[in-house]
Image (tube, rainbow, N blue to C red):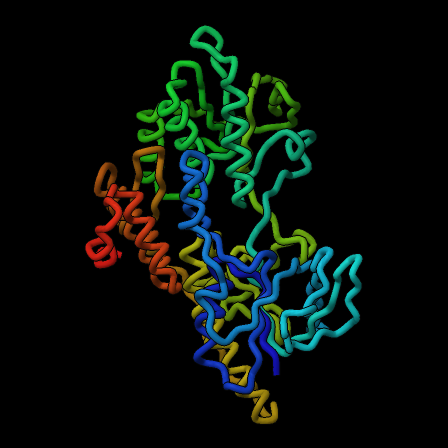
Length: 420
């Protein structure tokens, strides 16, 4: 019997780690990920200002998974009815010279590297992709923020934009979408400009089509985020809906325009290509169809209260725990012959642990009804990031992240590890 986890983001890595000790020893566990690593997405914006942090927020799957077979490939399609996933290995022939024993259905070729992987129980944990809503020019002109190379592009584009700028003719950097990702990248860009001595020659504008920043969050959190953006010199423009863009101009639905030297887009999400760009509605058991589960941002999860679950790391991680228990129950049922009634599956209920967002060198945190800013919020964000890395077995990464955040010197590892 084979269990396959497609994707190794927050949901996929957590699910695989939960399944490793829980599945029967003779059940094969395969994790498919495009580059065999896990990216700590909520720290990605920091690469814009501190590219050296890449080593801390990327985790090699082979270092944190014990029994799972990790296959590096892009999942291009999942046939949930047949229990077959289509994998694209690029120019590489999977299994050639690596001693891999996992059965492949279909013959790979050296030219396209495409194969098919069958599974008995599978989990789609591919996360969400950037949604450009078919707005003319936006996908071509705006940089997203989902991968390391996106953050590196945003950094390079920023330096290009300000190269010939001056206080009399400042460079305008526009960020479309004032959710948490947009807030964080806008804050990093203003901090980068300040650190490089270019603050007076740079204007960062954050656009939001709704009436407020962080529109899906509590009002007191929204106010604190907007105040922090103002303190960090980010200009916020709400009720601004982008209609199209080119290399120099953003045009809004009211036909007004805004000149732009750099454009970053964090304006929405869509489903992964393997699900045809859709985010299917998934019930609280995380079971989508037959033996296929959808966990995390790849689906629109509805919890046990009938409420839509927000796309977030904390939700994906906790959903994965529920999905792991349910998958083990299905596996045990099938191994026993599959007769009679299927086992009862647990449901997931979303209960927010709070919200955290960094804004340059500042931060805003909400724990229960209380909103915290300043050093307390920064300390909380650091502890959450380090705690997550430790929870997935990347203790050294957690130590390095804390050292970077709080300025611990090299050689003081003992005290840092206690904090992590």
